[in-house]
Structures are given as C-alpha cells and as structure tokens.
Image (cartoon, rainbow, N blue to C red; front, side, top):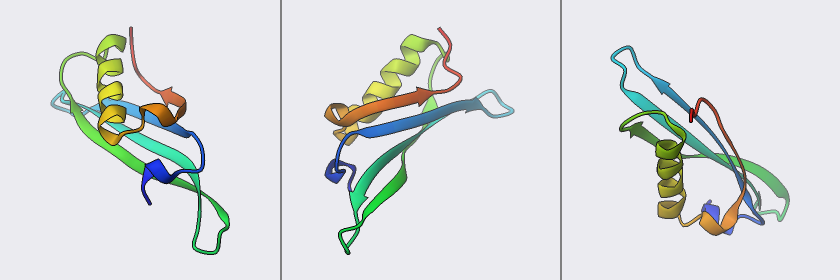
Amino acid sequence: MPYQSSLGRISFTSDIWSDPNLASYVGVRAHFCAKDISDRLILLSRLLAFRVVPGSHCGVNMARIFFDILEKAGLLGKVSHSFLNNFYS
C-alpha cells in the first residue's frame, strides 16, 4: 500500500548503527493508518529506507539524509512525528 494513500499524516522512527568495520547504516520506518479492502481502519508500518551513512552521525548530516529520504518518497507534506535515535549534534 503506498504511503501517499495514508488517511492522514505519517509518523517515522529511525535508528542508526555501525558494523564492526565502522560502516554506518540508518533505517527509517513509516507508520500510518489506512483502510483495508473491507473498509476497516488498520495501522501499517513499513520500511521506508535502509541506507549507508556517509560521514559522521552529526545532527546536520543525519537531517540531510532524513530529508532526502522523505523527499524521494514524496512524503514531505505528510510528516506527523519522527523519533530519531542516536543522532548526535
């Protein structure tokens, strides 16, 4: 089900981590409400992105990456809330 067809705004959760070789990765999930084929309200959660993080975990870099993910998914106008874990300024 496309994110753009959500019934309202979309909330996001995210986490960033490093592998043993110190390569960094970020995962972003979208959480939203939709209606199923029986017209019942359902809560959905989908992986929106999983990316390698170039550069540091600083807030500015992570904000750019997060914004880029939302922009490419066409979701900038649907943002409700986001929880971004392990982002440092």
